[in-house]
Image (cartoon, rainbow, N blue to C red; front, side):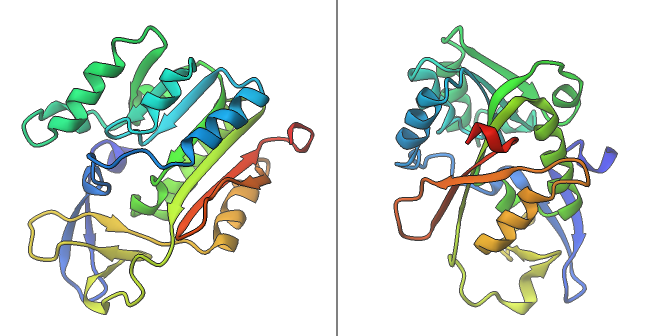
Length: 234
């Protein structure tokens, strides 16, 4: 677990170059929430979801609408996401806004998140996995989320497809690419085909799986899917 204790990953690109990936750079914190968040909220209301994990919450762009809808939200991210309020001003401002709600809580990944014993009705993975450079850590996170969900709890997956049609060979690292090649630190980007997403979630481990429920995507390049821990909760 020591290699995941910080958001910095020292990796070797396919061309032999040593690169440092900072996963807190993966998504622009100033982006608005995806329009499908209202569909997610409507779905949660129908399924009586009350407690939600927002894993890789970043600037809380999806946490805040959930809080406004009256849901209890636990935001999970690296501590470094909120420490530097100069370079991550938006993250800090949104965190202060969220903390005004009695329904908001936060956990530091991975230490506090692993140790926390609470259970939740649903988990959000909003553009998180595509910025996570290690396949082994993606599988680890899915196992943790599976175990933290109550009964047939739900997982909402968000990612995008075909942002980069021609990945430059010189920037390939692990199973994706690193961006901003002239910088000292880089963000990571990985695209998933729909069938790859389903394969990941339907076989988290030998004893854990999620079942496909529906798509909440509104067209375009967004991949927004709902999965359930048990079939009967569809």
